[in-house]
Image (cartoon, rainbow over all chains, first blue to last red):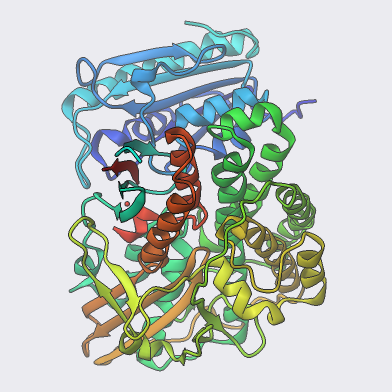
Amino acid sequence: MRSNHQPLVLVAGIGNPDRGDDGCGLAVVQRLRGRVPAMVRILQRSGDALALIEDWNGIPSVIVIDAVAPTSQPGRVHRLDLTDSPLPIGFAPHSSHAFGVAKTVELARSLGRIPRCLIAYLVEGERFEPGALLSSAVTTAVEDVAERVIVELSATLAAKGKTCHA
Amino acid sequence: MANRTIQVDYIARVEGESSLELSIRNGKVDAVRLSIFEPPRFFEALLRGRGFGEVLDIVARICGICPIAYQMSGMHAIENALGIEVDEPIQALRRLLYCGEWIQSHALHIVMLHAPDFLGYPDAIAMARDHGDVVQRALALKKTGNDLLRVLGGREIHPINARIGGFYRVPSRAELAPLAEALKHARDQAVETLRWTARFPFPEFVRDYEFVALRHPNEYPMNAGRIVSSAGLDIAAADYEAEFIERQVPYSTALHSVLKKRDTYLVGPMARYALNRDRLPADIRALAGEVGLEPICRNPFRSILVRGIEVVYACDEALRLIAGYEPPSRLFVPVEPRATIGYACTEAPRGILYHRYRIDADGTVLDASLVPPTAQNQDVIEEDLREVATAGLDLDEETLKARCEQSIRNHDPCISCAAHFLKLRVHRT
């Protein structure tokens, strides 16, 4: 049973703020702070993605925001519904460190711990060097994703987190 | 026998990036190369010119799995240089923090990285479909370890709360109380996990390692002790470089550490346990006996049992430390710089981690030397592989590849720390 204080939605930004465009997930959730209702929990994760399984425990709707390697155009935003399908191979490179987001999502699926609705916003990055700032293309995308997430949150909260909304 | 080439382009479930090349000629393994191709990370150079107070924040960035180990060796080496003795409550808090890292690092390796090898699964995701309860337990265990890091270290990854001489902030007893409750559950989960791994099919395989670990007069070693070995070595950390040397190999960006007089040696849980079993409480020794762990384990495939014992111990030790905790009267010992040099070794989850720092009169680091456990175990891993491959020459390619990868994972290498992951090539001519 969900307590009165249990969020309906978790928005998790993932990345490393010191590796250029890898920090875009964190930048998006920073822009969301103070702009979302109390039933939305905002979270930044910079390390082991495995902790996400505990983070979203009991929360019906989850939005994950992360950077991906460029496959078409830096700054391009992909919105994927991972509730019933894995991250496509092109977005799920091997991680040399423990568990990345793609493996974490599939582990959660194996354990029956996927949220009722799991959406990923993936932003194609341009540069990932240590110490780099966000590229201009990804900076623009960060604003775009933040606005899209706010719109999506309205629809999700209206449905009390029970369904995914595009 | 026909000449064969076996190649594995990506060996998963280790930390970092490297490849393995096996050359088999006329039915014999004649070359084994664990090649770490990850670019050098220059941390020792990055430390030069920085103030000694910045060291802990810099070295914590070396590894996302064992940042506490880097902070511990760093703080002890600089405190050794400056002649600082920290207060007993601070020592206890540091040991509690280290318990958190041992729990989370070992839990990750035992279940998520190593166990699939024994049960024939490609990864923990596939294993979780059949052994969901075990994976859930591991996640809960790992979370408990991470919670210790968060409360004591300030955050789980690259903690920020440790400083030379003590801590920036210490927890209240009330903050530790929920951790104690979680640790009681974690202890049960650790015992169940250990008993589960004890039923694995372990290959018959024994190696005559020289074990190297810390040894303390009355503690199972974490932060303090002399460096001892199963061949009679018994030195202070200050004498490490008189006995050990790092050498370059042409095929790897990581240095290989060897004993000057006797060459390869093993660090890590097997070495710690072999040299310090008598420092474990009687009930932990009894548990080791119950799961069939011999007093000295020389089969690296059974290292998973030793890690399991260490997780149970770390839970008990953390509970003991929390039960006796009183917030220290001062957060840290004041530190004044002077021109000097200091040394320390502490027990990272994967084995001893040596640090040396030379600092000048205003506290600037002039040079630093860091020797991670994986650099020390690389030769042993290659020797293990030579014997595993020799014993498995009749195996089909895929089975031999899998056995070689498992053999590497026996030692939980943190290749990121040693420089960084794994392609395997076997040439048979």
